[in-house]
Image (cartoon, rainbow, N blue to C red):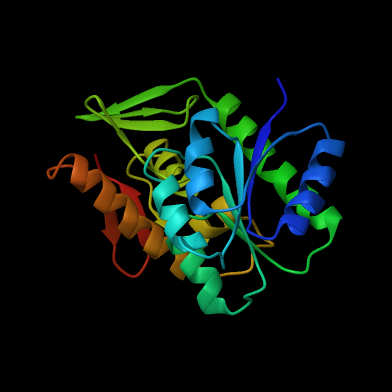
Length: 226
């Protein structure tokens, strides 16, 4: 079955442009023109969501947070807003990538392919099922659960958890985590790791207040301490 991409943008010409490019590559494409329409399409389980920031009604940041309540697939923001603050806000809302309009078709399709490739690689990298007290990590299914409750981690939040959990007690510098998860060519810095770890801790703590497996090594980075 072909991978499924959901496009969310109130500008129909842009949606048609992206849809045609992706369908030419063999992807199945879902199209939504508002946040409400996008949420209604979530039961179709898209493998990647491409999301505009500026839309009437529910904006892209709000929609991203709503999607993260039930989905952990990669989310790629596309926006004419190009400031660092906008990119950081998108990542903090649960996004995995940010592409500035106008963009070239080649880069757009390459980013979609790269996210899907990483998802496939992560699913096949390990068939280990890791347990730490009430926390269970399914590396193949890319899911973390506390008891019977799924923890709504984003793709990169899960990548950080899996990296640390597979190397218990090993200390990882923030810069090392950033390079491993975001890649050497990423446009950002290691401060993003700190924000992601805060969100991971908050989500795990909401599921189990006694659960705090990520320890801080002051001045260095983080380690798995469960």
